[in-house]
Length: 223
Length: 218
Ligand SMILES: [Zn+2]
Image (cartoon, rainbow over all chains, first blue to last red; front, side, top):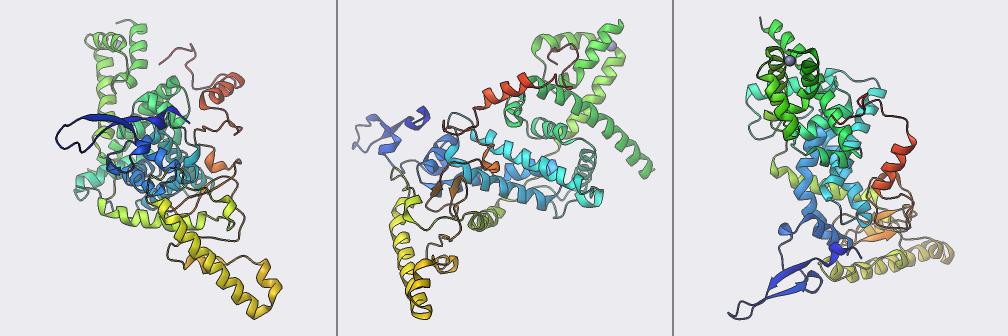
């Protein structure tokens, strides 16, 4: 049994005013804590122990992040939705083999990133990449999405991203859009810290170059 | 300004503008930028493109879409999750933490009742032998109140099966591709822990083209 599974948490008992705090294993006190309050590891551990109803809490915690990373990668809302769905299915299927000493979100994001890269690969193999294909299939429904400026910015970023190879795109999305640390990205992408930094270096240069080209083109279109 | 100092600074700029250099290196870059207009110009162009990404909020879905997401996920898990209909592969839910354990018995009872009804029905229609050799169809169990899918297909090679959020069924270990991304905790599985796997790959592969020629950290 991994050590994390015997996590001790203080539980307050109804001592009628004495306020004594006792330590007791969560195994002995089921459902005292609201599931939403539980840490990822604890939720996974309980799922492994058979309470798969708690899987919903994990999904609720990460569904939008998974979708958002996938959308950044593939630039298509239908595909991003499917990737997020598939990622949770895989997590569910393999939850019993999850090592509780590791971070759940790192695992989830790795699956999302790999599925996104696969999706892009399939798309490029099918030679169907074109701006029409990567244009958003559903309307952007994020908060504040209706501003024209934001819409334009989004489209431009997506357009530039289509010209960036997926492994560089992934580090840009994880680091600059979602603010994850390079070490965390290394765990997600299963590469070394220095590889992540090198990819980030190249990715930012590439993005800058393409963004400036796009800027010039937009300027010439407007004038 | 020396060519070498400019060259060194330019190489450090993409990480510098994102705040990804350690303090010592960042200070070195900064002191160069204060005296070199060309590098400072380059830095500001890079910084503005990084700011574009950082200031653009990620595309997210409205919270009310969650119920659709969850419903669809459960529906998909039904298709994904063929489970054996023999009680032997069912893994009881360990410690009685959640509600799922309590649901186990009525569901199994319902499945058994449906099995009896199906077998009995088959027997009356087609004779004793066919009724005995067939498993209950998926449909007959799908209609049970719990909705637990029980199919006569073989169990998948590995992993948890069953409708998401419902009592679990586990089949034996194997090498399903989709599961290999999970960091394993089971020793019997052939995939070594991440650290060792990475080490083996690094050791066996030629020098990555992504490494800096001098092998230094960027
Ligand atoms: Zn300079």
